[in-house]
Structures are given as C-alpha cells and as structure tokens.
Amino acid sequence: MGRDRVMGAERTPLIAGNWKMYKTEAQSEGYIQALLPRVSSVSGVDIAVCVPYTDLRAMVDSARGSRVEVYAQNMHHEPQGAFTGEISALMLSELDVAGVVLGHSERRQLFGETDKALALKVPAALEAGIAPILCVGESEEERDEGETERKLRHQIGEDLAGVRDERLAEVTIAYEPIWAIGTGRVATPEQAQEAIAFVRALVGGRSPAAAEQVRILYGGSVKPDNAAELLELPDVDGALVGGASLEAESFAAIVAAAQS
Ligand code: 13P
Image 1 (tube, helix red, strand yellow):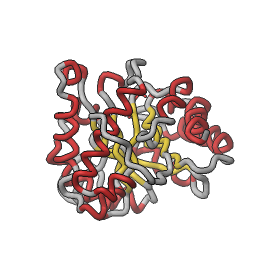
Image 2 (cartoon, rainbow, N blue to C red):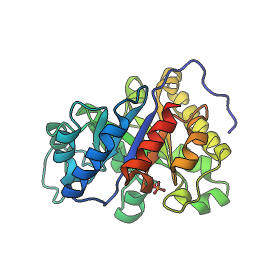
Image 3 (cartoon, rainbow, N blue to C red):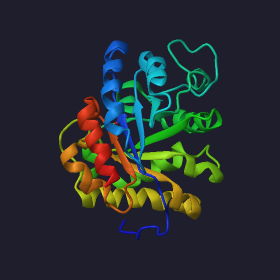
C-alpha cells in the first residue's frame, strides 16, 4: 500500500444511502419529502438512495427533477428468463432507476453472491445504462491476518473482469470493510485512505486514465459526526451509508459534509 494519490482528477463526490431491507413504499414517501428540501441547494455532490425494489417506482416519481437519484440494491445479469425471484437491469431501466448496488457483503455472505456472478452483473448494468456501485472489502479475520490487499485484489480482478478498460471509470467502487458495517466501528482515516488508494492503484494497473476518474466510496458506520474526516481524504470520493441514511436529517448532514 502507500501509493501516492493519482493527481489531477476532478471527481464529483457521491453520497449514496443504502436502505437495505428498510422502509415500505408508504414510509419511503415521507422520507423523500423530508430529504428533498434539505438537499435542494446542494451543489457539487451527487446523491443517491438505494432502496428496496418495492419502493423504486414511488421514489423515482417523487425524486424526479431533484438532485436525488434512485438506485436498486441488486439485479440479475440476464435481461429476462426463468429466474424466479430475480429482477433484471431492463426492468430497472424501464422504471428510470439510475443505478444499482452490486456485491454488497450482505449479499455475498447471506445470499451466496459470487465473484463469478458479479463479473456478469457489472457489465450487464453498464450495458443497460444502470450505474453500478460495486462493493468490495475484507472481513475482520482477513484484516487481522494481513489479507486485506489480497482480498481486494481478488475482488477487483474478478468482479471487473467483464468490463472493458474504456468503461472502467463508469463503475463506482465502494470499499466497505465488513467489520465496519453496522458495528459503529468506523475505519480510521488512515485505514480508509490506504485501502482506497490501493483499490485505485488496482484499477490503474488496467487503465491509468480510469484510475484517475473512477469514484471510490468508503462505507461502514459513516455518520454525520465522522463523515467530514473521511470525505476529505484524497482518494475517498464519497460514502455508501447504511444506518445513518435511514433518517433524512442525518443523511442530509452527510451530504452537507461532502459539500464542504
Ligand atoms: P452502516 O453505515 O450501517 O455501517 O452500513 C454500511 C453499509 O453496509 C452500506 O452499504
């Protein structure tokens, strides 16, 4: 690790809220009405909320014309087929869904999401015009054993294998150390910067231009009171926020931290 920051890049920060399996459609409506006025004067920050499938249509309609984009939390790589319970990029794009979270550690750990599947999903999302946020990150055990870089190299290598170099910069990568997710144990600024610079260098190994442009977010116990110190790090281009995105007020406070 310890590579120098790639200089000269102008990357717009992205603050994305991952609701996980929270909020019914009715609950989502109150949230977006509370969020929109709080972020209406924000500039220079992209904002996304990644919501359950059942909330997508209402959220897209309510957020239309605002600076808030609506993302899904998973998708299948095929446009259609005999895949009971799955949703395709085509289905998302017809709803005007802007993007999708892929490879979240909860999907990897609890639902058997594989690197092989992600190698198909990431290019399928790009092909359909759905912006992918690819999540990567090590477990506590892997970090303790000094395996963080190996894990990141493996995930980045496998999951982006199907993306052509020219399109690499269109993928947003979220570095989410599993031990920091939902635990209140946020990575230190040094840990976040080091891992994210390493991920950027991995992308640079394929395309130096893409490494300058690709957005890499930090995720894991981001809160209004720790967001600023993470977001000011040279290689951190935003945050993927779980728990603190569930209240419009705290999510808006993290957006504000990205602006300043
Ligand atoms: P928390 O912010 O609740 O730790 O969740 C992080 C996360 O998993 C976002 O995808």
